[in-house]
Length: 252
Picture 1 (tube, helix red, strand yellow):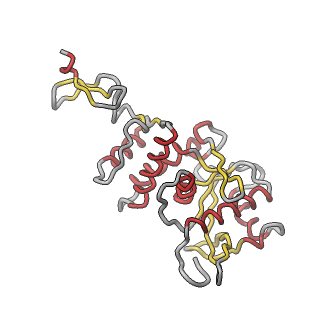
Picture 2: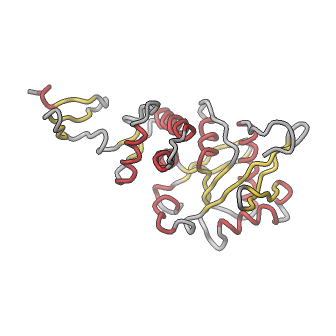
Picture 3: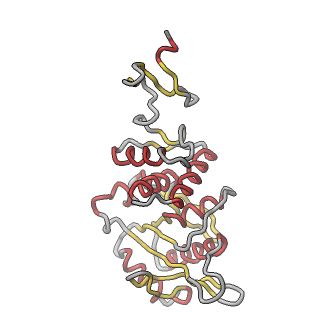
């Protein structure tokens, strides 16, 4: 949202907002949090020199202690030490804190949404930051250390989000592509075994613009490394060390 000029948020402006938010969270005593969503993907992609898509908001998860996500959201616009950098504005049907980002002749306001696992108590496996699978990574954003959920976590959530939307999201697929490239650049992998995640991955791969995730996303239900029967071809197959599909008859 803009007070003047273009309403589009540049990558530099998003980074500026993320750095301001990271500083504010540290100032009010938030010790464990992680940026998520398109904002996190944009921040991470910038670190690797990848093309970033425009996104206009910042989402993050905090680990609730004596203060909840809702309390922290309110603190950003009321705490004496940080409130000068934020403004509360209506976004949709609710009021949200917005980071104030100055421009040469105006300023823009970037909405912030903060979550904790109390919002989804049945999904702690994704949102409880004390769990190993939900570990965060620290990156230098501007002149501040900012915490993001790990790359595998971000990719898993983007795969699930793509599958859950009734209208398949182009931005989600762009983010999936970027995150797959980052895993490859790092030489890292992630593993998918949960049935809902397997189904979501298959929906992503069914898309004509799906990226090549083979080798970086490990999923036995999609790319089995053990011999698996193909009833249509009446033969066993598996994927070898170079992720090439091989058939059992080749060894006869």
